[in-house]
Length: 173
Image 1: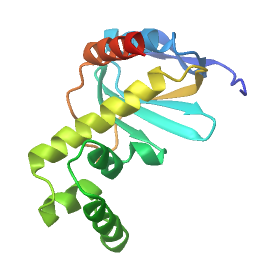
Image 2: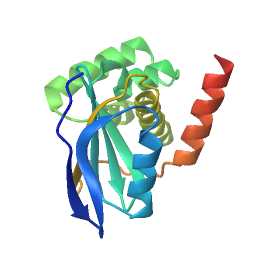
Image 3: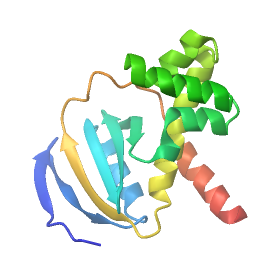
Image 4: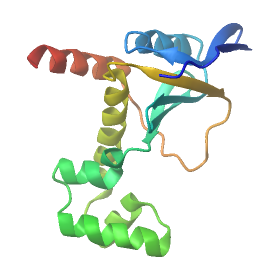
């Protein structure tokens, strides 16, 4: 793993290390620091070729994105049984043709309801957060303080619920 030089800046009255390396044991502390200081920005986590981004608003995780195929909304909806492989294929083709988001396309097609879309988005975010917490070897990170992109769909995420679920999952494995 390539080590990045640590750099810290004053954000919200305290110094935040804005890039560096982490192990899975460091993430809860990073999350808690952002929550306690009510920071808004994007925490990008890197491991090998994967890039996963957690979006914070006033210290709370409200959205997540990933470069990994298995973290795409369509894949998550397929995995939880909300859509069929054919609906996945058709919606994927329509993304290329229309440039619309897959969730919007699936709702317009009648494949899912808006409630299913919300459930799928929440599952997607939970999967992304869980996956970075479970990266055994950790990785590199950088934090970008400031405004969030306008195209994200903010969702209420209970980080305590996620951490409890991960602990239960680890204990049953």
